[in-house]
Length: 612
Image (cartoon, helix red, strand yellow):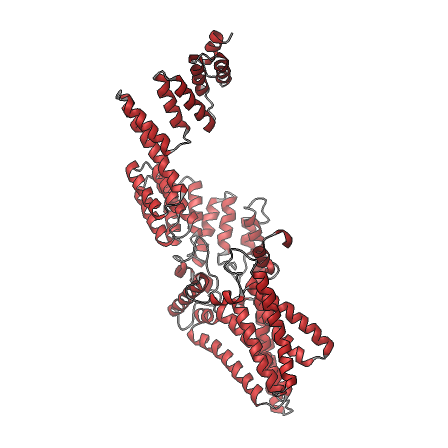
């Protein structure tokens, strides 16, 4: 990206191009600060300068990410380091000076980042450091969404409190808890709290054990820091505490358990806690340690195997996503190849869909419809909550010409995900095909209950109109939408279109009843409702033509032609006749020629009669 050619907010948001997302970037930098701080106290002058510059750059980047968790963690790490500095070196001028020097990067980076963030316009994330921290309240949308997710996770954990849902199953089993909270196909994937997610996946007991592990690590290292008289043990204990604070904060508010860059540091936390003790040459101690190391090696061998299976799954997922992004044109894979490559573990993508679901999608695009239905049904047993399986079953049934089944599948997809605009659109289209206006109104009511947007009213209004819904009731329906969204031009235009058709119908009725005054009144009402409607202009042009007012008629015909291109040549023919009546043969012949070029049958005789 050329950062000099984009807005500052875009440039800041793209800081994380190589790390996944901006929070991962912030966390992966924050967790390295403890090592830099300890390095500053340990190394001599030249290396200290390098570390000081690195701290300056790292802290600036963290503040520019505006990641609240990282900002809080960085602050806590500095506080712990100040405690460490005074504990190790005692309270003296030299210690105070060293502490002040290390606080300078914080002050400088706050000044730099604040100066940069002030230049960002119309962005709630990149405001200021204090402004970002002030957003940590229940009124903030992101904070509130996280609280809702935590509640859902706890409710989910209560469904299987003893053994849990099974590792990795949160992203599937949490979907029903969120169907009325997340738009379209969005799901949380993680609970943004590792402790709650472990509790949901492995049960309350194991969740408490996981929490206890962190408490135990903090207690052990705090005791070593304050009680040991060896500076090496104190230093490693404080390093472990600082890294634990960063990881613990991230685990409390994000999901470091699923980030390799963060899991490495969890391993280091545990290893530092195990090895940080006074050396002992006692045979029993050595035996226990050796047995422990062999046990860890054995367990690691098993986890490496499952990691390899996960790697194979991720390779398949990469190829599937590549084809999906290309709209399944010139695909790398086929349905058969996906089936052959589906791993024994794991059977879902990182986005929670089953691999079988994508096999079904490939078969659908290959027109192997029976195979598509077969594997979509298999996918339904793995993740039945996403709604897209029914959506594709609807498409398969429609391709087969089975409208009744398509209609049923469409409704199932929509009611499973009632905030999904695509499911809503397709479902009410099938309802319209069945002339089921009651179902359209029912689905509309359900959708706006959770996601009231103008587009939902427009879509429902279009389908009701196409299903021949009563015009009076349709106008009342649109009026309800306009009342909720008075500034929405789409709904107003839709209302005017319907009103225009109604006015034209009434004008035609009055014209048939020889009541020309009333007919003209309703034609004008129609034009007022839709000033650019070429059909209304044509009606008015014919009205005045038949009334002998050729000047008025010509004006409306010409305006109609400006707003729409007519292919029959009829409009040009009557324009020519208006000019002829107004004794303008030049323009009359011009439009007779245009009418004739469009093969209007009455034009050629007029050319022969008037233009030769």
